[in-house]
Amino acid sequence: MTNTSQVSKAPSVYEFISRTIGIIAAAITIVLGDDLHLWSGSIEILLGICASYPIITLVISLNFPAKFHHLRRPALIFCDALLVGYFISYVQFALIPSVIFLVMVNTSVMSLGSIKAWLACMSALLMGVLLGISLDEFNPSFETPFIINITAIISMAAHFAVTSFYTGRQNRLLSQLHEKLQNEQAKHQNLSLKVAKYISPQIWESIFSGNREVKLETQRKKLVVFFSDIKGFTALSEQLESEDLTAILNNYLTEMTNIALKYGGTIDKYIGDSIMVFFGDPKTQGAKKDTLACVSMAIEMRKHMKVLRQQWRQQGVKTPLEIRMGINTGYCTVGNFGTESRMDYTIIGREVNMASRLESAADAGEILLSQESYALIQDKIICREKGSISAKGFSRPVPVYEAVDFRHNLAAKSSFIEHELPGFSMYMDTNRINNYDREKIAKALEAAAIKMKDQVKMQG
Image (tube, rainbow, N blue to C red; front, side, top):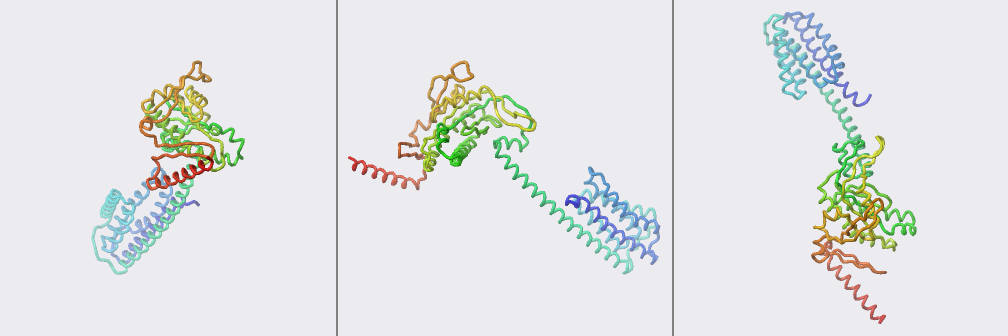
């Protein structure tokens, strides 16, 4: 039997036991009082009720409609209160038994944690009292013999013992179920995080937040499309072992992906050393801001390649790898393509092809823009006209522009210093250097300059 079935069936069983003890207590009290000629009433009918009531309530509890399960306990406790009211009337409001019956029924109803349920049960209790008064002689007698009081007290103690046992058992079962649910939740969360690595974070978030349906559907949206690849990577693949090449490629893709996510780009796919990114879906800031974000991403990628080249040079990669990029803004079809069993969230259309053609036409280190992209960012980015190119699939020559840098960077003194020659490489971003490192760097450059001058003098 599973923990879930135990939790669902255990209440009925333990409530039956608790209810039976309460009924037995009432029956003993009634029989003792009858022997002592304390009360007059239909004892045979009352004892018949005592014998059948726990069984009837157990059957009802086990067969209670599932959709009304939340009403099961309140309904049964309502019946308990009605019967207890009749018992109190039957024993002529004997003080100790009446108080004990009231305590037991109040304990049960207060466990529901509902004031409305308590008021309903108190109403049922009053109805039971009125029913008893109408059926039997009403002759209140608050005093009862010692034996009846002791019997009632022992019965209440047994009732509370069973209730406490049931509560502890139920808490343990609920704790086990809670632990199982937590383990299942952790398992599914871990699985979802693994699956998330195969799709773009933006798409994953929109699916799991419920904002996007997983079905075959597409829409037309104005997007910014970006393509890039590494010029010289094919030649490098012929020089390195596959393990080393894989490490370099994964390092490159990781660094470039982090930059893309920083600017809000949606990673579409990796094709070898090529990266396809688009802006404007699932979230957009408008065509102008999306295009500026894409170009800003491309500029940072180009600058970061200098850092990567230094790292790769230390790993023995002598081929100077450069990134080339193409960017285009236009209307594309975006959405789920494929089948109901296997989908791919991607973009298609003429504007996607244009971005790919621009990337192919770019030289090493270049960021080529289409006319549409250039028009949207020219106020923020310094661009250089590159004339026109003949692109496959386009009947007319396509005007292109090269993104150089931000206008504010070129207006002020650039913070980047770089120089590369055989045996020498220097890349420095003065804005990113900590103040406490500046003096160390200055001393290192001075020492290098002195050594270089001494070698020049010796050769002269």
